[in-house]
Length: 333
Image (cartoon, rainbow, N blue to C red; front, side):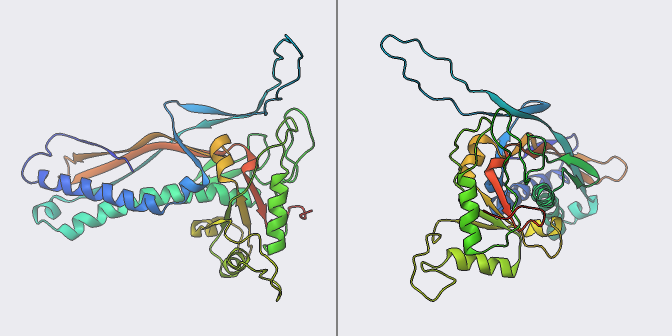
């Protein structure tokens, strides 16, 4: 995790200067530790931007080659722009202060506590924000409320991420990626098949192939998932039938999801991580990386550390995801 540091005047004297380098080092180490544990990079297409906002778009597949005969002209391909969505970057801030007395008395424990809490708070905010977006999408909401602000979480086609009737931009039937079936071996196979049959905005065949299962922290759901994919024999019968789900899935158990989904529910998601990264199903862009500056408060003589960043995330192409255990969804075919 990259942090940009700057400092004001008066910080190089013998009293304040000695705490600057250790705190910087501690902030960087803490950030790297949390980043390694984060699942955001597995659920979102992570990127950067130099703009106030970015227009996210989808494209239909190319029509393909046509037979033109000897000396035939090159046909113009029918590839078209699909739906589009604007992602605007919000500003996020926080600060902490270390008293002059702590610095003078070299209270190392106190000097570490606040930087640790500061960086943990920043990274936890990002993790919780991502979970708030996905959790509200699971609940069928068009927006997510986070710290009093509303964020648009519709897909680019204008309906909720998990919906029973995603409209095509050009041609084809409405499509569903929201299903009510609880998790089971059979439901896993059916939902995977449903994603294989997803079509593009011009009714073209796609290459969606889910490889990741995402669930909240739920003991019964974890048991069912790992029983389904962790045995090389059929987990629901006494016979020796081959279990084709064995060894094929990455499982993400995301405890941050729990506080943003409806209590008592057991939703489960399938994600095609490659499709997500290629076409931008869930998109997260950092406009300004975390910038931390250190100054002296003239009224208190405290060393004040302020952090600022700009980022936002949203959902674009719904086809990267499908959900089971959604009460308002369809039954799996």
